[in-house]
Image (tube, rainbow over the protein chains, first blue to last red):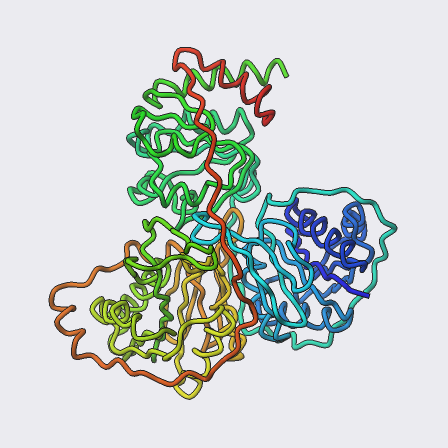
Length: 324
Length: 249
């Protein structure tokens, strides 16, 4: 029977939507192959949390509980994943599109001599040979990629498949892989903002560009983000100028994002910026220049000075939120 | 100490991507080639580290897998400041094949730090650096936005959602770097361009590594529907459309 193994990643013991999306995707492929979907959890995750995977078609969770795996070490984590694949006899391994997946999956690929496709955007177009679609040149073209090895690794681009509920009776199985736990990387410090909506988790992103003219003009944009429960972001010139931190830069060389709703406020829409946001479901653009390329990518547009329009947007969205 | 920077030769990021008539490939005729932007950041950081090391880092080498057409890009890396270059003489296959070729080419060279960009701007694979570390059986840290050397210790920042971790890897190791690793990529000076002509560019035979994936066909992106314009005096209409038409709020 064909088996699909889904790598899940916890954040302080909790799963995120991207894990449930990867689970939904893996379960669907398993169904198409007439097989079963098993998930792998590394770290310390409570059984109640693990059981949540059962809502998305996962039949079994291999629970690798080991306190020395509290911090990420790519080598050690990849070893555990490879052992789990071997134990289950899995033919397909699914990762989310997260940075951790990016760090581990390539190592697993080499361990298992398994061909890998990063950031696929949908279900396989063909099961034999396994063929999956992905964006290339940051969305300037789409490609079909065939994986020719016996074991195949696919990572799923965020927000490209969605959640598919399919409740199963899920089994939790303790998994104790015999791997080297002497890590060759050591985490010595962690700095993390709390209480902020994170860019990669956000359903809505409010992003500002040069049109805002200076760091001091960000409060109304932050206000809009707060009203909508959105994350804040910026274009490259803004982070280069130091108006906003580099971690907020979205675009080809910054973060690639795929929210449901993206506001490009005072951003002209250089090709590199659009490459990083083109997977957004809906794009709203505000710019003074009707010729700005951002309007080619946007669904809704307003011509005008973003500094004058932002207060109006805040008023309109606040009114909407109070009524809905 | 020696640093290796892996370089991918990619079409300029502003290139309009055209497909061949049968859509079996991307038409790369008349394309301007550049150093992959993330690799360029990695190279810049490697040179900064060397300059600040007081002679402790004696060499920055760049390596690329490609045919002769990749050499202008490698010369550019030398002009920016790399000391020497290695070209593995074969057309690059997938990330697996490229990582395998690089590992074979350098396995006897003992580089202390290997830097790779987090992805290439062409096929967006995000895999080569991690694969290389596994072929070399050395530790790797991904999403690296800062890299410092303090005495014998290497400290890197690994970006995580909402912040970063400080990670100390044992050497040798592979750092997979992203934006933040340096401020701006360096551009070659006239003197650098002159000197690059005389710097060693070694060509090594390929190990004939197998690719495990292949691209079978391409499609252009679908044209987007025209943008709906909303009067700046009536932004309430935007809220209404997002709610009732797009059903997104």
